[in-house]
Image 1: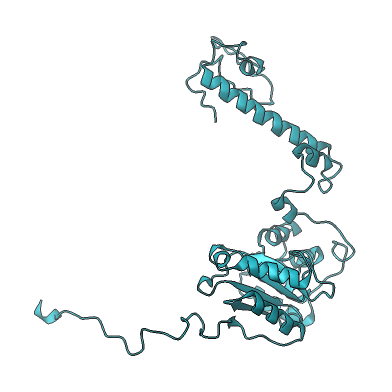
Image 2: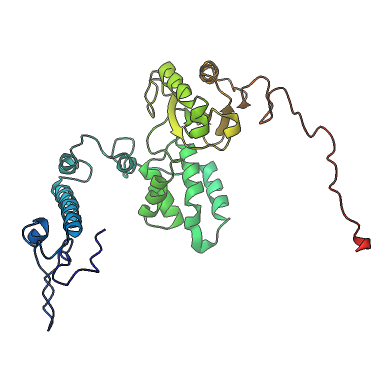
Amino acid sequence: MLDCSCLSDAARPARLFSYGPTPRKAAGHTPIPTTTSSLASPAGNATMLPPAARLAARRLLGLASASVSEAAARRLAPSPIAAAGYTAARGSVSRPFSTALNYHLDSPDNNPDMKWEFSEANMKKVKEILSHYPSNYKQSGIIPLLDLAQQQHGGWVPVAAMDAIAKIVEVAPIRVYEVATFYTMFNRAKVGKYHLLVCGTTPCMIRGSREIEETLLNHLGVKRNELTSDGLFSVGEMECMGCCVNAPMIAVADYSKGSEGYTYNYYEDLTPKRVVEIVEMLRRGETPPRGTQHPERKNCGPAGGTTTLHGEPKPPPCRDLDAC
């Protein structure tokens, strides 16, 4: 940022990002220049700004010009979804990743006109969830209600379910949308009945998580976040699952039995061969043993068993308080 505190009033580039009317001239006050051409041109005001300030002003002008161009392109776009002008201004053919996460496109199976409601069994759970909060803070239950809706709807939350939750907790729908788009645990597009989440954080990456994900994608014939043709599997990525000592690992969200039989299990110490075996067990309807897949480990213990703390620990020595 350009520090103009040391410049005279006439030299300060105060109009660089100002779009309001020109300030009135006060008595005894030098008017602020309303154009920036003199700042952009070294010859225009060579004696007014030192070289470093002129360079900084040019850079600010460049940033402002690019920002205004993008803003104008967005205003001219036919819709926020198409954003063709914005795309052209950026020189890119795809939406920025963080923006794509928050887009919603109506479809036959995901639109606000759909009828959606909790099942009778889940409505009992809804009442139990809301009983944990004061009656004037029902919105505190948005996260557990979204989770319940996701379990009921086969692993993802349509916009109609968000609207239903908004009515239950008595808030505007946008309040529920904000939560659903902020937390990556909520899927807003279809996932497989078995949603496989590969941990991609540093310890797992060092221990081979990229090979695990590549093996899964090649074996299932899909890309990340795509469904297999039979709708059974999808593969996603998740950041730290908190079991780094057993890296690499995946989590399997099992939506095959609805909200009543929903499970979420960790499979750790994986190899490419073992992860394929787990997938095929799930395909056959079997339940793989959760936790570490290392044959010589138990939970998070070392291979071959523990080497310390085999007996009762020695109490710490205590001084004789009576002698004090």
